[in-house]
Length: 385
Image 1 (spheres, rainbow, N blue to C red):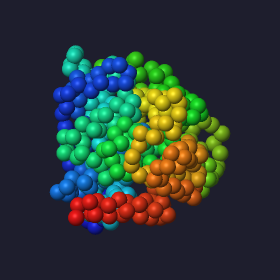
Image 2: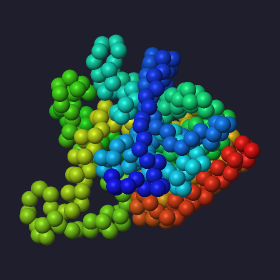
Image 3: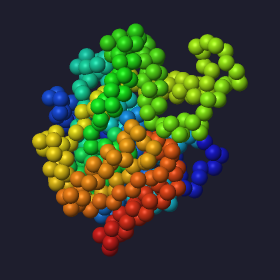
Image 4: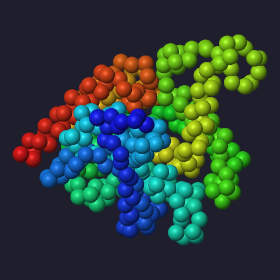
């Protein structure tokens, strides 16, 4: 945390927890009788309640997207480079809402929460959730905040899928959908990566069938391996070569199986840090939600038919070196929108940062993002005047 909070930061923020008693019917056929959502807000809601923007998080994301929780924080929220005064999502213009989805592990009801039926953590008994379930719960959050229509729903990766689902299921409740580094459904390769990550957790001796909370332990090694596999897919070969090359930690071979290359050290550090901060059952749920996502499924596998439900404008962005969610996957969405005559803007950003590029301070990307959001804010001003 810097000694002085930067002028373009939203500053110190405090999460809010909202309790919902209305049962939430889930796609899996089960329901949550009650649940809680944790969220943060940045900026001010205007009198017309027309300047609200929803931020949907990705696989390991949460509600803390910008600013700091205390002066002791070592780093700001996960999308701080895009949210704040004068930034792409300008909090001088927009009222920004960022939440932790149900099934999460950062305060919203999830596997580590207490199951009221038995007074123990839900663990593996927590119901399977989907992108559509998240969107349905987000509409209730919007209702509670008095927001009938979002100026924009924005997300990257799994968050982009939520933005896309919003446009299909609630076409009258958003004016813009910003879909970044995402896809209309996962490829078989992507599902395979997720399955390897899940198996590393499920086969960890400390997993205990998902009831590790009762054993005062957690599947540390499984989470480390899952994160290592995932992190490799989030970076491009060029980015890893530029960052690490074949550099050795000690400058020479030790001819053993301990860490020798810098890239090995980096991956182990990322895995260890993740294992201490993320719940294993939540990771399993989130990856399955990714696997299940396919909005065309309800329309005879016809993406165009699914997107014909939409009314909003779209910004779709992809990154040249993203091989986990390649530009071709974004183009599937764009081409379908063009064929049904929807208003869509598309940009493919040239970068070597891989899938994680949507989180990185890339000037061309943020300039384009900012320009589009200025267009959104002008519409808000015109509608309010």
